[in-house]
Length: 160
Length: 364
Image (tube, rainbow over all chains, first blue to last red; front, side, top):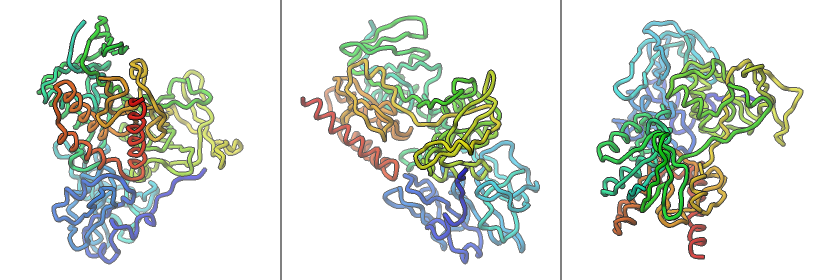
């Protein structure tokens, strides 16, 4: 049976997905949103005006590599759960990814996890680095987890 | 017989927003809803909505619902819950079974029908077994009543409803074995598909269901790929171990009351099927009968709210014999802002056609 497959080729070189050169410099938002959805909270919420959608609001989000600091506010607000913060320089050997998380129970800090790709397939081992529980009325948690640098474009989720 | 200026049937996003606008203009409003709680389907929308700031984008449906109820309460609109509007009779009279006990007729200067939509079923062998249900029904059970209708599920249909509800089933702790879609591509947004794919839920394209099997309830689903003519390739069937099968095959407007009121209809596939003709003020071909929300064409909660506001203002204009053109223009602009993109554009065109057909019919 024909399965829908999602991989990085769908997103690389789209306006929300920065160059590898920028990614290697430090924390940055990765926006995996390429369709003409009438939606712009990422643009409105960004304190540094690093995300541009403009008019019409169906434009795919475009990210300014110089302005984005990887603060993660857009991760929290994206209704499509399509934004992640990637920190290529988490430490010498590992990158980290911050994802929006709407499942319970929340993982614990330092918990060992299995990192998954965009299709939910196992990629490598990882570790939970930070758990930010939801603020009032938000109901979205942010989870930061680390894994081997070389999988920075592949890993997008985890399981326990 | 009771008398009200405005009777609103349906306390969902459209009905509540209409009530708020009409109350702001001091119209005497009665909202009728057959459910025990107002809010329509908003309270099961636990996801954040798309849109812009003025559409309350990024806010969850459940939070929007709470805000609307607060406002309705503050503005003191009358609400009859657990009450079914069963008919619209000549000269704007609504027949209502109030609180499931008493038959009441209410005469109004205007009636807004915002009754929402009904899910499209699809039939297959075994589809009457307990455990086969609409995706919306499953969503109500998990998000409103907090009841798990099953442990292992199959979702039929990869439109936005199928994809979103599949994700919410994961949140509720249901193992989603697969989402199947008869078309060669998904019809919903990729971001919604990506959410469930990351959790390892397979989405099978060009695939249909043949059978729900089980003795007294669903025990398995037999699925099968289809060829280019959508004919099942029977030698490649596969059985999935599931106890829940959800159908997300689209919605259609809940037209009964509009039909009974004598409204004229037109067929608009991008809006879910037969839709009551209405003009730019949401008034149908019957004088004083208005329509808004999914009832006037299947769209989204965000558009339903704007249409409700538009109807509320237009009804106040009619009753008070005044004009609030600027306010209506603002709402219409917000509606247009939302009706863009792959999905929105087609709905916008259909809505324009409806307005044109309305004037052709009303003139004649």
